[in-house]
Length: 462
Image (cartoon, rainbow, N blue to C red; front, side, top):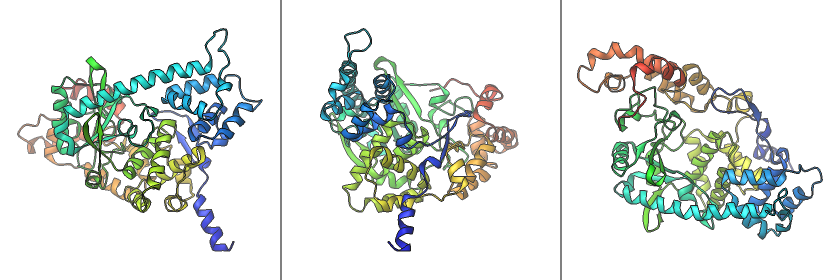
């Protein structure tokens, strides 16, 4: 191998995964490295082997004399948490390791295999009830078919999973074009849905107006969007719909937002047609979602694995995928997620994709990229954290432009957001500008507990 070939191989491998540090969300001081498969707990290694259908690796874990005695209990707990019971139950038999799970649990006659079977039976029956709920919502919102993209579990379960009940999901996630957002919410409201008013489900609560749905997406500039979903709940059938106006939940809108809708693909649920992002766009969405969970979701990791397999069957899609990741400035996030999938699930990601997306090996990418708060939300993220976010972002020019222009927004915005959407816009500019600077500079938690109580109601008007 000559020098040039050695250099190419080195670049393909990129930086070492376990040199990247992550921090839990919020004010957590919990810092940890991204772990390789070899560094995981035995029950996690066993789950990884089951997910990728690797009998040899599963047997190695099961035969390891140093494995903790609670291996099965930990595996069952993780499988239940991730909604994998039915998939794990099938893999135990297809890999011919069922006898290993037949031991009784404590003094009970119940076996570990029996516990998995009971959990799997529940998930399978619940899956078909979820499909019925999805079909109901599609029927209610059919007039918005061209302006709504259904994402994550509800769609992926019926396209890349075989059988579909291997992918459990709870709420329904939808990306709605901002021009149709208010009408979409009102349609759900007329069908018996209510606004689910907890800050975790809407970052606007306590830091902005909630008189009408349009208030939630009102921002100093169009490229700012809410990070959290707007959750609507219908209590009579325990049905939740998470409504977003952007796919990445990072506070700024997709650069190629119109292309996302132009490339959408059609699918069906119980006779109801709907649109969903293309597989390559969905892969970007799930990789960003994986980073949002701090790379701690096995369910999302399996989504990524199967979406990669789908792209491998579509010649030319990987070139487009790499271009889109660079345009949206998410290359490092995508590289990390794909590299974890390769390490844990032996995902067949083309070498050139990893080479093109690999981040620079420096302090910023290793220590700050996933320890600084990833959200860049104008009315919830503090000014110091916004500035830190900018320093580690490849799209820092776009973000700093957004931030600087937002300090002197239009009078129309100030009146709409801090006033009453009435007349006298110009006269109210100086009155509302200090309020705006306070919201733009302070963390959402501070605003909610101080002046936000005086300025806005914490209960929605819709």
